[in-house]
Image 1 (tube, rainbow, N blue to C red):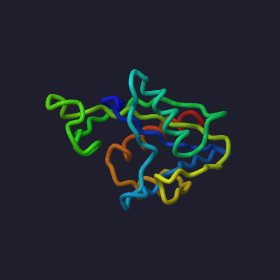
Image 2 (cartoon, helix red, strand yellow):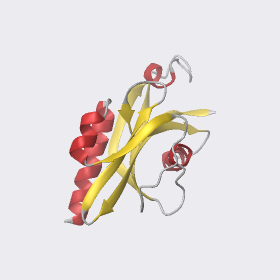
Image 3 (cartoon, rainbow, N blue to C red):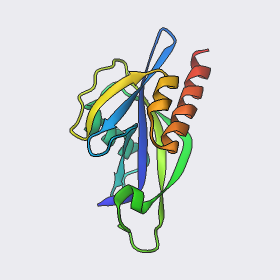
Image 4 (tube, rainbow, N blue to C red):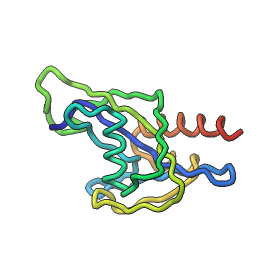
Length: 148
């Protein structure tokens, strides 16, 4: 059963101190975002992030996850379209992560039409949701500090 929270994951690669992020064009709506999905049962947000990343990119091995401080509140109607967890739950949390890839190899699921690897400045311009933009900004700042 779907748990009352959402995860957001941005894959990234670092090569020669250059950082690129993967963003994804949804199949059902015409916009770009990170990997997003819901928790299941009693699974933790990091477990949900790993499952969503695997389901949407095929990536499972050699992935290093970076939990972010960014946590957002999303309306249940925007996420699942209804009051799935009862009339008393109006918003759910969205937990954010970065996922370091060693290569740019992605096996795209049918949830997305396409993906692209971009620098921060280009990627953030393409994203629809403010939560995606803020999480990507945080991840980029953390990674720049790490490589400097």
